[in-house]
Length: 607
Ligand code: ATP
Ligand code: MG
Image 1: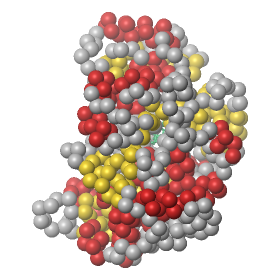
Image 2 (image 1 turned 180 degrees about the vertical axis):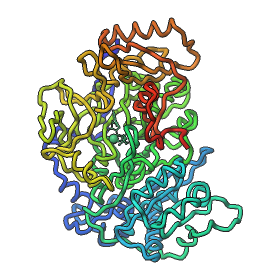
Image 3 (image 1 turned 90 degrees about the horizontal axis):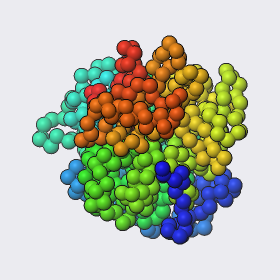
Image 4 (image 1 turned 30 degrees about the vertical axis):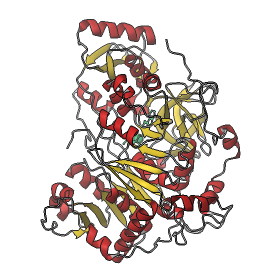
């Protein structure tokens, strides 16, 4: 049996010298001080991209120039970051090239000028459908500088999911590549009358003419000046649209504002411990909120180097990237860690990463087994944290200096007030007793809180009650203030009067050495109301038979008790995942019950 806690014991763990006591920070925290730190004493307009890029090189026009007005702190960053590397673009073959803060600033200035020259105005929509790489960064940040509302889209989406998302937000402009446009959008264009400008990057390189009704990205950039530019956006002006992962239904479009940057900056400091000199790698695609908030904005805000991997997951390539790029802080997802675990400890150990000092993960429940495995394989535990598209930034986290209870999501960050609540119509009861399960709620507002679900005002309104935002996730808080994920409210199983969270059952199954991945659903049952059914993916090389099934049943019963353990276990070759890597339990349930599968546009392999 594993111990229940990983102590950050000063005897065998050397805390970085800057590490502050988060309890002190929680007690003295105020968003105004973060605003001052980023903008100086005379804030004025706020533009997320200027704060992220230009602030470091002293070219920021009014919106962001105030940095350094106080205590000279900004000046130090400026001097260091001028020629510093903002992005390390790692190609599929592992080759890498650097882009400095000043080069990024000039390129984003050019793109912003080009957008404005097309007649686009503050508040207009810009969708960015580009593979991970320079153009994606230039598109998103240049769009923000021009005051447009930017939505990065996942390039693996097919025409249908793209059309759905475009229809929801009706942007006036789109940045994409020629090949993506030809494959996915050209045929749909007549239905997208709102789309006035499609700017396409030439990724074909064969001299073929651009697709009709498109403008050439590089020609536009070349014709535009690189002088500083920033629309005078205000803190509360819309900046980004992020689509949710669609794990529980049709994806929702969450709208975020420029001051979300305050949250990105503060949480990247508290939860990811970003500091000058760090090389940071966020593996999420910017088509998901993590990939934009922490893949684009947060590292730039901190003036650190951000690794951008242009390829897809491959265990060996990822380990080489960690090693070669000397990544110091790595932000990834449980699915990726489980895939690495499947690839084996030996492979990881063969790629020592002495610079790596923090591994964090988000997006799905992180089963304790993975935390322990990482400690063995990388010599570092995984610091799980929790947040959602709607929260726009990390809310609850296992921070660097705090002990880790594997399986727990950690504690609310400074500036975040969380609670476990019970909803009864419009009424809300805050459950203060430790150990009680209920809905995870957050005191509204905070800077990166979503300000709307586009086109769904009533749904947005229903997310709030008595000053709290209700997350739709079930959790419990222990006596130390640590939060434990129980399940999504939609996924919780009611069996013989017990409320069973799928995560607990899945974690227990994944402790068994034969199990690579598990997902649990409630299946209607005449006696029990619902019975617990598990879908299990065995590890490579394991023989799947009745004996293994019986062994797993026994293992689960001894760990969980007969009432909570699965009554049925089915072995499957793979689980359905969203493209952002989450298990789609609703699909397993629909398939089990022969029901329609609903929106599967975000399903991996759906296009
Ligand atoms: P949709 O809302 O469309 O169903 P989604 O909720 O998966 O999709 P995201 O906003 O990408 O879309 O994901 C947020 C959700 O992911 C959280 O509400 C929670 O259910 C899950 N999640 C995120 N981090 C964690 C974590 N550390 N532990 C457990 N679950 C997590
Ligand atoms: Mg959600």
